[in-house]
Structures are given as structure tokens and as C-alpha cells.
Image 1 (cartoon, rainbow, N blue to C red):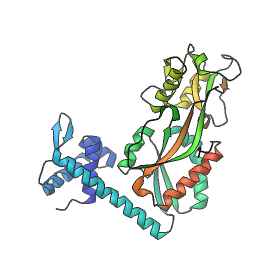
Image 2: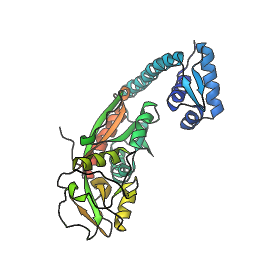
Image 3: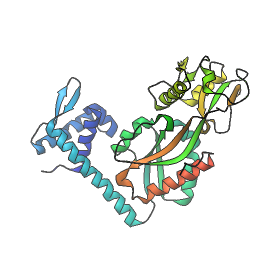
Image 4: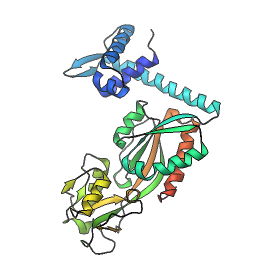
Length: 306
């Protein structure tokens, strides 16, 4: 039975995406090419791997067994690549890194500068990915590393198979239109009746802020729902409401027309870096982690608590 790693990689993509078209888009293949590989794999296995379900696919019992072993084989490939890189002893090649907007703007420039001085042959390619989507992208091998977020007071579990490293501690401040609020530290409980500019509950950030407000005694209802902190700041500057904005997003600069207030009980989040457990031995991964920690200090992020 000739399964082939490339064929198994395509198969795993279809299983996770739930359809040929989505898998083809993620892999940059044509849908017909993906379908041909699936058909060839089914011929090798001698069984149907997916049943059609409307516009999608549902994995069969045989398909589920194959997927379990495909994960083992593809994980072993990653481990082998890490071992070869370690034995080679040089920092070279390209790392594919998932970033979210705040990190891309505030931390990545420092990181690239630091890494380019210490590993001149190692190249970086970054792609903006929502932290929640980045976990899937890591698992499927589309990213070598990804920046993630964890809110200590509203933590959500990470799936198995990931190595997760704390890079820095980021705190939030309240951004309000100039003159709206007294110039002092404010308690969240005092902000129940002001209009908010805030990310929706479909995001980890939105859920964490709502959990903090709930703990302070009120339910947050956003007057203006936007996901990017830069957009929220612009709307605050226009006098449309208040927003919680991270120190990394502020970057020491405050938009005209905005007053930034500390909170009496600060909301904090951990900036994390994650990679596959099977990639732990790669020297390039370790070099990136070291540069990321130095970049975090350069950006003013606090070191993680020991």
C-alpha cells in the first residue's frame, strides 16, 4: 500500500476543512487536483474515506482510522526535519510565522531587526492570522510558529500537540474621548453606563473583556462593534465611546483627542508563541523564541512571571 506523505497531507487537509474546495484553497491546489489525490488514496486503501453530506464531506470509519495514523506519520516527518536541522547546526531556511495585527505593528519590526543580526541566513515570512485560526494552521503545517493570546482571568485551553511559550505580559488601559472622564485611575465598575467601542463576543478578546466587565458587576453591550484596536482608537478619538486598548497597541503614542486612563484592577494578557511539539528540537525555532523575548522587552512588555 503506497500512501505517500504528500497524499496524506492532502487527505488530512480535506478532513479538517470538511470539503475539497476549502482544502484546495488552503493548499494552493486546484479542486480537481485534490479530488484526484483523494481518489488515488481511496484506491490504495480499498475503501471509501468520505461520504458526501450536502456540499461537504463526512469522514467514514475507515477514514477516521487512516486520519489517526496519518497524523502519526506526518508528525514523524516534522520530528525528522527538526532532527536534521539540529544535526546540520546552521540557522538557515525560512520560518513561516502567524501574527495578529497588534503584534505585527508593534513587536515584529523589533523581532526582525534582532533576528537578522544574529541569524543572517534565516528568513522570516509572516502572515496575519487570527490567533484562534492560527492553532489550526499550526496543526496542519502551514505555519512554523504563531503568536497567540491568553487572558489569565478568562483562559481557554489549547489543544494537545502544541508547545506554548510566554513571551511577554501586555496590560490594557482605558481610552476615552478627551474630557469625558476624570483624569485618574478608573474602576471598570464605573463604566457601566458609557458607550463602548469593542470587539464582539466571537473573538477571544471580546469574550475576555466581557468577562472582566461581568466580574465588575455589569454586562458590556458595545455601541460600536469593531475587532481591530487601531479602528477602535480612531472611533474613540471621534468621540463615539470608550475602549480598552493594550499597551502594545498604543506603542507609547496617543491619538489626538484621546485620554488614556489606567485601571484600578488592570486587565492583562499573555503574548504567546506556539509551535508543534514535534518541532521542538529545531534551532531556528529556538532562535526565533529568543529574539521574540528580546523584542518584547524592547516594546515595553513585562517579562512573564516565573
